[in-house]
Length: 399
Image (cartoon, rainbow, N blue to C red):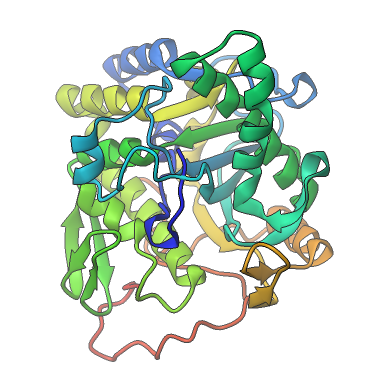
């Protein structure tokens, strides 16, 4: 899960399968498969009891709002803490097994209001310079995971833990510090947590048969393995990972976030429009991929949540990005970081989550009510240095 090269940072490995479970539908087979997912998924003890939400009656809408933290971790291990084979790392352009840095290169808080009819997803730039919880001082927010994990390693070893067991328990410590830091930064209480690793993102995109994306211009990046023409294309597996992972050649990390948001909305559309939940083979493959790719907080009943959120099929999914003040803040030990004002961020989050206007931009996907979002960022974020889109670029394309 570690990382040393900025060129090898992985972005966008988000638990997209969770978005799909929120709109599951409807057949007995679908619920059977979802029950299998609930029983076989890897869990972690990372949510404080005070933040855990009680399950409501099956089939009834959510009684209280919930905040879900989705993270993508630059991980060279699987969900059970075992090292990924070198041939898998090579296919993903991920370097050696010891080339990581345990950072959360994707952080998105998904707010689901009471009733579950709409959701707002707020992206947090990984280089945001914030106070890390636990007295670690001010650093980039994506380092909270590695700081919490590394701090726990010594005491865990003295308890006799080693190998995959040590990795799993240390990861829990990293996740806890990440959650505490984001709560402190945003003013939100995180009720659920989901993490997806490097190989997991690749597997999820393959399981649904690929995701359509659109680029304004062709790209070549040897670090991530991104090699794509301009225009629309269907990506899966290592190609999908390279799309959301690319750093070199982009004007800023805000453009990378735009890619993540574009990919997420397109993936949700793909899952919902492709008959995944009525196709036994597709659904079984998706459930299997989620089981091998995603770590959830212990006690999160996905089946119950999906039942309570059936109303989301008539709602919307909206992406936003927190306001930032500068993309090149010099720091004492972390290099250039993203300058943010915690008070401004908390005010932005409060407004975003209490607004009565939750409809996302774009046309609704066929009959399901979820609207695709190509790329939405906060109006108070600094403009990208990207040139204006060409008049010949298809609508919704990203850098």
